[in-house]
Image 1 (cartoon, rainbow, N blue to C red):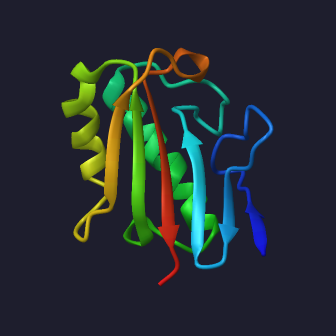
Image 2: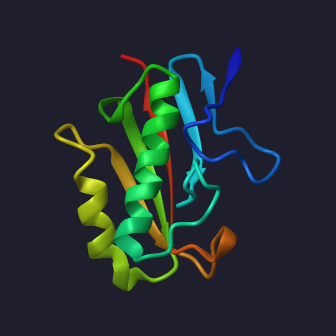
Length: 126
Protein backbone atom coordinates (compact mmCIF):
# COMPACT_ATOMS: atom_id res chain seq x y z
CA UNK A 1 0.00 0.00 0.00
CA UNK A 2 1.37 3.41 -0.89
CA UNK A 3 0.33 6.95 -0.12
CA UNK A 4 1.42 10.01 -2.09
CA UNK A 5 2.84 12.88 -0.01
CA UNK A 6 2.68 16.44 -1.34
CA UNK A 7 3.02 19.81 0.37
CA UNK A 8 2.85 23.41 -0.78
CA UNK A 9 5.87 24.06 1.48
CA UNK A 10 8.17 22.36 -1.03
CA UNK A 11 8.42 22.90 -4.80
CA UNK A 12 5.78 21.23 -6.92
CA UNK A 13 7.14 18.39 -9.05
CA UNK A 14 8.42 19.51 -12.45
CA UNK A 15 7.58 16.18 -14.05
CA UNK A 16 5.48 13.04 -13.65
CA UNK A 17 6.53 12.19 -10.08
CA UNK A 18 5.43 12.86 -6.49
CA UNK A 19 7.34 14.77 -3.84
CA UNK A 20 7.34 11.58 -1.78
CA UNK A 21 5.76 8.16 -1.53
CA UNK A 22 4.88 6.60 1.81
CA UNK A 23 5.24 2.84 1.43
CA UNK A 24 4.78 0.80 4.59
CA UNK A 25 7.44 1.87 7.09
CA UNK A 26 9.40 3.84 4.50
CA UNK A 27 9.12 7.29 2.99
CA UNK A 28 10.87 7.78 -0.35
CA UNK A 29 11.49 11.48 -0.98
CA UNK A 30 12.16 12.45 -4.58
CA UNK A 31 15.28 14.42 -5.39
CA UNK A 32 14.89 18.01 -4.33
CA UNK A 33 16.56 20.89 -6.13
CA UNK A 34 16.95 24.47 -4.85
CA UNK A 35 13.63 25.92 -5.89
CA UNK A 36 12.03 28.31 -3.43
CA UNK A 37 8.46 27.02 -3.05
CA UNK A 38 7.12 30.51 -2.30
CA UNK A 39 8.45 32.12 -5.47
CA UNK A 40 9.01 29.14 -7.77
CA UNK A 41 12.45 30.59 -8.50
CA UNK A 42 15.73 28.68 -8.42
CA UNK A 43 18.08 29.78 -5.64
CA UNK A 44 21.35 30.72 -7.36
CA UNK A 45 23.40 32.85 -4.94
CA UNK A 46 26.00 30.11 -4.27
CA UNK A 47 26.21 26.38 -3.71
CA UNK A 48 25.71 26.75 0.07
CA UNK A 49 22.44 28.64 -0.51
CA UNK A 50 21.40 25.97 -3.01
CA UNK A 51 22.16 23.20 -0.52
CA UNK A 52 20.26 25.02 2.25
CA UNK A 53 17.18 25.41 0.05
CA UNK A 54 17.37 21.74 -0.94
CA UNK A 55 17.53 20.69 2.72
CA UNK A 56 14.63 23.00 3.62
CA UNK A 57 12.58 21.47 0.81
CA UNK A 58 13.37 17.99 2.15
CA UNK A 59 12.44 19.14 5.67
CA UNK A 60 9.05 20.34 4.39
CA UNK A 61 8.29 17.02 2.69
CA UNK A 62 9.41 15.03 5.74
CA UNK A 63 7.28 17.23 7.99
CA UNK A 64 4.21 16.72 5.80
CA UNK A 65 4.67 12.99 6.41
CA UNK A 66 5.10 13.53 10.17
CA UNK A 67 8.83 12.80 10.08
CA UNK A 68 12.11 14.66 10.48
CA UNK A 69 15.79 14.31 9.67
CA UNK A 70 16.18 11.85 12.56
CA UNK A 71 14.07 9.41 10.52
CA UNK A 72 16.33 9.59 7.44
CA UNK A 73 18.24 6.34 6.85
CA UNK A 74 19.67 6.94 3.36
CA UNK A 75 20.56 9.94 1.23
CA UNK A 76 21.90 10.46 -2.25
CA UNK A 77 23.63 13.72 -3.16
CA UNK A 78 24.08 14.68 -6.81
CA UNK A 79 26.62 17.41 -7.58
CA UNK A 80 27.60 18.93 -10.91
CA UNK A 81 31.06 19.71 -9.49
CA UNK A 82 32.72 17.50 -6.89
CA UNK A 83 34.86 20.50 -5.93
CA UNK A 84 31.77 21.85 -4.10
CA UNK A 85 31.50 18.72 -1.94
CA UNK A 86 32.93 20.37 1.19
CA UNK A 87 30.58 23.34 1.00
CA UNK A 88 27.52 21.18 0.40
CA UNK A 89 28.59 18.70 3.07
CA UNK A 90 28.86 21.49 5.65
CA UNK A 91 25.28 22.60 5.02
CA UNK A 92 24.00 19.01 4.76
CA UNK A 93 25.70 18.03 8.03
CA UNK A 94 24.04 20.86 9.93
CA UNK A 95 20.65 19.15 9.47
CA UNK A 96 21.71 15.93 11.24
CA UNK A 97 22.74 15.60 14.90
CA UNK A 98 23.64 11.92 15.33
CA UNK A 99 22.90 8.48 13.96
CA UNK A 100 23.81 9.79 10.53
CA UNK A 101 22.17 8.15 7.51
CA UNK A 102 23.95 6.06 4.93
CA UNK A 103 24.90 8.18 1.93
CA UNK A 104 26.54 8.35 -1.45
CA UNK A 105 27.61 11.44 -3.32
CA UNK A 106 28.06 11.42 -7.07
CA UNK A 107 29.08 13.95 -9.67
CA UNK A 108 26.75 14.22 -12.65
CA UNK A 109 27.01 16.05 -15.96
CA UNK A 110 23.90 18.16 -15.38
CA UNK A 111 20.84 18.53 -13.18
CA UNK A 112 17.33 19.89 -13.85
CA UNK A 113 17.10 23.66 -14.30
CA UNK A 114 20.93 23.79 -14.39
CA UNK A 115 21.23 23.65 -10.58
CA UNK A 116 24.40 22.47 -8.86
CA UNK A 117 22.94 20.14 -6.24
CA UNK A 118 20.06 17.69 -5.86
CA UNK A 119 19.41 15.43 -2.86
CA UNK A 120 16.99 12.55 -2.34
CA UNK A 121 16.32 10.72 0.91
CA UNK A 122 14.72 7.59 2.28
CA UNK A 123 13.23 7.80 5.78
CA UNK A 124 11.81 5.19 8.11
CA UNK A 125 8.96 5.62 10.53
CA UNK A 126 10.14 4.95 14.07
